[in-house]
Image (tube, rainbow, N blue to C red):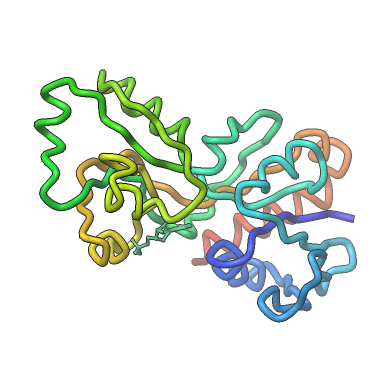
Length: 213
Ligand code: AMP
């Protein structure tokens, strides 16, 4: 049995066409079932639904043989023990720094004052500001990052941006583009040895679906 870890929402939805192109269909709709283990039309393959930030952990420790996770989550996790064969080019977005409209970010950085930054991506933010030589106080949040500058919790946020509509709706502006993000296929390295043939078939199927897209 091969176990594929996916998170509900954007990654699940954008993975389905790739699976379909590879002749795989998931037999339950995650939005309609409370099941966490979903069968597929292939006896040897099942899908487990986990929180997005838990996908690398499931795959690292063998709770799943492979999984699909955003590069953001993968970098924060560290990627230990994970083979990363494919950029699936799905759930594309960017990770950016944003501030309240009217906040003079350039002046704050130039003056060398300490910037408070709220984010779920503490590792990415720390590395980015360290490279720029900007002193920051990082505040770890788990969601609704946009609220932090509006309530005075922080000067800036580091968050995922896709269309920019969420920032705009909250009177925030993007001031730095840190990196482009897309979802990656990650594979447990031990599984890759022990279940080589079925895993190769799935990796090749994803790869073929990508080439056809
Ligand atoms: P947008 O309004 O299109 O810029 O989307 C921004 C909101 O969606 C933010 O709350 C982000 O955290 C979230 N978001 C954007 N792209 C992604 C993605 N690829 N995966 C997960 N969350 C995302």
